Image (cartoon, rainbow, N blue to C red; front, top):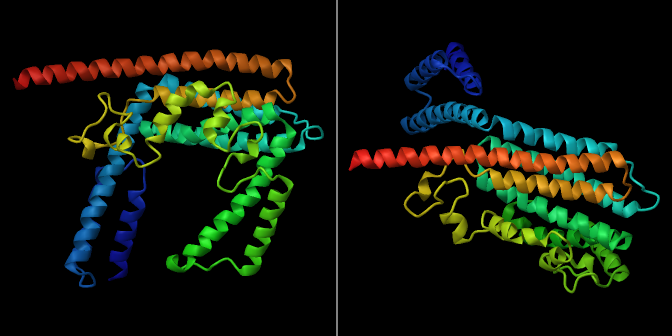
Length: 354
């Protein structure tokens, strides 16, 4: 290929990542494709793959940009308020004066959980902005687990926090063994015997210090406060176990069960076998993920504040509780309006087809 052709193709590639792809850009793309077709360097099959796939990606990006703009227009108020809610939680966490001298392990665990939870909340926000309701609920599942753990750590005390951290040594050794079992098949370099031995020693020391830790029970660090090492028992030991129906429902979008295949949160009338291949971004189903995310964040922030409460933080939490209700109602109203429009549209279309 000539340098001129290379430049035209490069320009088309650069244009393809623009958010404001327009008709002129399409013209440049078409011109680049024409040059490629005339080149003897590519076979017909390779050209077909590149051209058709490339056009589809460009059109899909253009469609997605338009869809997201319309979604943000419809949900401007609840989504904007949701973003502000997350920022307020970050502010409270940053302002916290952790009593590390008194609760070194508890503070370490809770500060880590808080940072991870804020990240997850922003991931949920990103999924909602792009129309992925089921994905947002699936991501909330982890956030709920962290909220249960945060409350449990505060409730059970410093020793439990120490065991929570110690259990990580058991997980590291367990995962290292699993990795080595499959390293050759994956074409990866295995962990050395020396490294594996070091991980094993750390795991054994953790179990010697805390005999209740069990590599097959991920929540055994909470013993003897719970009867077994299951998340179910841990959640029962907190005051937020009544969210379990949502938790179980969210599992459908994490695991491979049939419910996750044939029912989609983002569809007004769910999902069935006939339209299962029509799944795409939707403008419906965000109320539950948004509300549940705010609740979980508040539980985590409240757990942290309980270590060293002050009146300003308590006032902020009460205010955020009120805002959570307002944001939820705002989102629910938008969804109801969309649902009514959809039902009316389908009714009119069905009448005309008859």
